[in-house]
Each structure stands twice: as C-alpha cells, then as structure tokens.
Image (cartoon, rainbow, N blue to C red; front, top):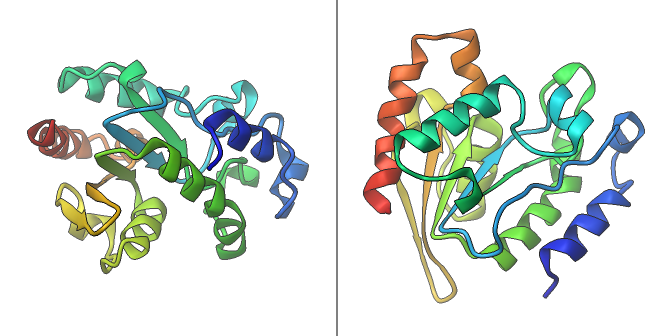
Length: 188
C-alpha cells in the first residue's frame, strides 16, 4: 500500500489522459493522513491549478465557512477531487478522464480510510456511490442523504452534497447546503 506522498508523486508524473498538457500544477489533494471526513469534488479550477491545492478559490472560501459552521477545521479533513488536473475552460470531466484519474482517488481512499465521505456535485457523487454499490441519481435528488457502506473491509457513510460552486451561481442554495452540512455534524 502506498502512502499519500507516493501517490502525489505518481499524480505529478501522470500522463494517462491529455489533461496533463494543460496543467500548471496537478492537485493531488491535501489534509491529514487519518481524517474522519474526506471531501471529494470534481476537478481543480483556475486557482487550484495555479496553486496546486484544492478548493482555494471562491468555492473553497465557502467550503471553509461551511466547515466552520459545523465546528470542523479545514486541517481536520482531507480535500480532493475526482480529477487531479484542471479541464480546459473548467468544462465537465469526460468519462475517459474519470477512468484515467480515479485509480489515484481509490488509492487515497485506501490509505486515508475516512469514516465519512462527502461528495461535492454530480460527478463525485456518481463515482463514489456506484463504487460502493449504490445507485447514483441527480444531486438535486440525493443531496443531504446518507448512504451507509458496511462490509468486511469498510464501515463508512457517504453524504452527497451540492458543490459549493453551485452556491456561487445560485445563492438560494446556500441555506440548503448549510442544512446538508448539519447531516455531517450528526455523524461526528
């Protein structure tokens, strides 16, 4: 089993799909090696690509605010994405990119062993729910619900959430997202 630094090094050298050609910095994710909570978004944006860190733009500021709302520090959670490189013009991840990049996410999950996985948006929700044997629906139908994953190797909960960027485009979603974050708090 690899550690987070070894996985990050693999991500830095990755050329499995064409996204590496557009990157300034890959964004492997960041956080402690033993988080209770892991947040998974869809892909780095412009600011993330420039800094090589996840959720550092406007959506990241909102995520920090939401974490604070439930009494959790950013330094207590691991934050990553389905894709580790920014798609051009922040377009949606393509199926072949998701297929190429998610083995890194799977390795991170194996190392981190979070008790709570919060998926941010449709792409991460679909990938994680299907990975653990649940049916993925639109984020507007499943946000704030919890999905238990219990088997021989795992005992965790998946909580799909709207992506914080959705609030930037639709401020009316902020109250919904805050309510959904209370679900996280119930599991802490």
